[in-house]
Length: 398
Image 1 (cartoon, rainbow, N blue to C red):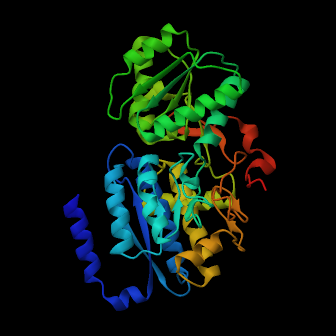
Image 2 (spheres, one colour):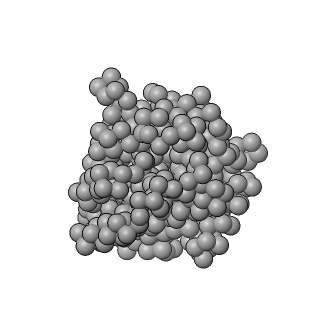
Image 3 (cartoon, rainbow, N blue to C red):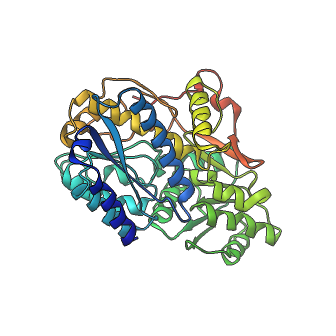
C-alpha cells in the first residue's frame, strides 16, 4: 500500500500547477478491494458518473473536477494515512466517501481539524455526523447522505416485530465498530418496542463458520435473525442455517443488499430483507436515467451495491451546488452553503430541498428508506405499497 501511495503522489507531481489551476480537486476514499469492495466500487462508480456529467456540462465555476482516489481497504489506520495525504499533499477542497464506520470515525477528524467538508455517502454509524458538533466544536464539517443506523435499526424492528409479528429475535453482529454500534442501536430499538433479544452473538470479519452462533440462537428458540455485518459474513449466516436445516427469516441493515451476500448465499439468501434508500428499479424518470447511464458506463446489468452507487452519485451534485452557491472552494464557505442550500437537487435517492442545516447534517430521515428483499439474485421492493403513487419519491421531513 505504501508503494501505491508513492505511485499516486508521483502521478500527481506529473500534473503541472497550471493544469490544476483550472481544476477543483476532490478526494474520493473507500475500500476498492477486499470484502467491502462491492460497496466501495459502486460508490466510486456513482461518483465518477456524476463527475463525468458535470465536467461535460462545463464543470464547477468553469473548472473541471479532478478526483483524487484512494483505496482505504476498510482499514482504519490506512484511512487515517489517506486523509492526511489528501489534506496535506493533495490539498483537496472536500472529500466524498467512507464506507466503513470505523474508518470514518478514525479518519474524518483530520478533515474536521483542517476545516475541509466531508460528504459521507455510505457509512451509517449513528455517531458519524455528530462526532464534532457545537458547542464543543465551533462548526461541524461532516455531512451525510446515507441512512444512519438509528434509522435502520428502528425500521428493522418495525418490520420484524410490528409488521411481521416475530417475538423472539436473535442478533448476529460482526465485531467491527459498524457491527457493534449497530447492535447497540438494535437493542435500543427492541427495548422501545418492549422486546428483548433471546440471543446476541458476535462474529469476526473473515469467519466462515457460524455454526456455534446459530446453534445458540436455535437453543434460545429464536424466530428471526437480525443482522449487522457485511456481505461475505452475512452469506455465511444464511448458508450456515441451510446446513443446519434451520431456516429463519433474516432481517438486517442495508448491507444484506450487497452482491457479496446475494452471490455467496445463492438461494439461501432469498427472502433476506433490509432498509434501502435506493432499489435498482426505474420507477421515476431520474432513477431510470441513472440506471441506464450506469449500466452503459460500466457494462453491467445489476449494480453490486445500488444504494452505494446512488448515494455516491447524489453526493457529487450536492457538493457542486454548495461550491457554486459559495462561489468559492474555501472549506468554511462550502460548509456554510451546504447548511443553507438554495438550489433544489433532483437526486436519485430523493429530492434534496435544504437537506442540511447548521444543526442537522443528515440528508436522510426515517421516512425516506423503504424495505427491500432478496429475490432471485436481486433486491426488489418488499412491499409494493411503499413506493406507490406519490410515495415513489420520499422527501426529508422538515
